[in-house]
Length: 435
Ligand code: GDP
Ligand code: IMO
Ligand code: MG
Image (tube, rainbow, N blue to C red; front, side, top):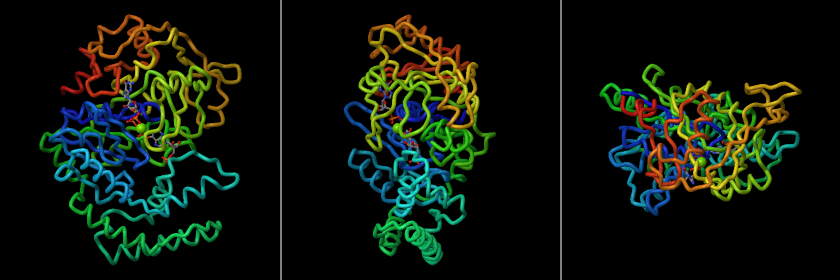
């Protein structure tokens, strides 16, 4: 029985939420291993729309447990709001949700630190989601963060909190940020929130490993995506956590020897939110068309997503660092009406062809994408539910992506609904899901 990771193969918003919701019925537990409420995973079930931020998308399936792992950073107010809004939509997390006692807590003053580092002269603005994610991970790595378990030891919590708050107060004073922050109120609110989430808190590493020992299956849900990974992404235009597959182990406490497969989710084109290099970006009419047809606006911040063409060197790179067994290609339908579809097949850098990913964003900004154009199929793919029934040119497009990236396309999605996905017969994906 395989425990499997599902994660983004590009810069995010590939449709991970939809894919996880679809696959979750074959698993007992869905676990998030990094990120926080910077993620926005959209799932449509009939006419109901869910945007999940902290809670794994598996929550929409009956009988599936969901875990917020130790690698996640938690804004308690955002978590409680998400629990309440799910309840209003008919989903009760009681008895389904487990929150790691080792996850770190985001406080309102983390957002202030973020604002400061984004706005400071001579700093590179990343265009973050302004959710305090980066500064919370800074405190974690700086070994001064506060974890969920600390909240239930009132004396220890107050001592830790007062030191952390004092650090931030000094920082605000040094950088002359004149935003009033009521540190005592934040502490009091945190204590109230802690009491509310207490029933969900446990040692999730133990819970997950016990579940595996009992023969249960775990699906790991990546937030963000590989090119936003703190180590492997387009640094510094990344998020502050380990979004790539390696993060699934450190972010949950499930050892690599217990994980059996990695599924990459990629759009049939590509998007990015926030600043940073983007070689195959199309900022003209074509990009506008992708944005309109794909409804490419951020699920968390509402920002228009930058749009461009499928990037083979980028996908080859993310396949390498994650070891993708298979790819799920989403939003193929968005390309339905195009006459021809450019695909970036390699980069040109200072007169030479390169296929690897440069280490610095400066070099990646310098590369010129080299395109091959494939003929469009100019017919609707929505409603098709068998791979063999896709238009021949759509299949040729997918074959091209497979050949160039070296990874099989195991499934294709042609609409936002759960059932608008076809898993290819005889694929490695089908095999992984049935192991
Ligand atoms: P995530 O962050 O990776 O979960 O992706 P988002 O939810 O932020 O963005 C993906 C968007 O595309 C959502 O609005 C989905 O409902 C939608 N979507 C997912 N798959 C498809 C598809 O195959 N076709 C279309 N047209 N939309 C899709
Ligand atoms: P999902 O899970 C797309 C981007 C931000 C910014 C950078 C750092 O829905 O795919 P952060 O607030 O994390 O410090 O911002 O990362 N970013 C995302 N872009 N989808 C996401 O999540 C993202 N989460 C963060 O736009 O460029
Ligand atoms: Mg998203």
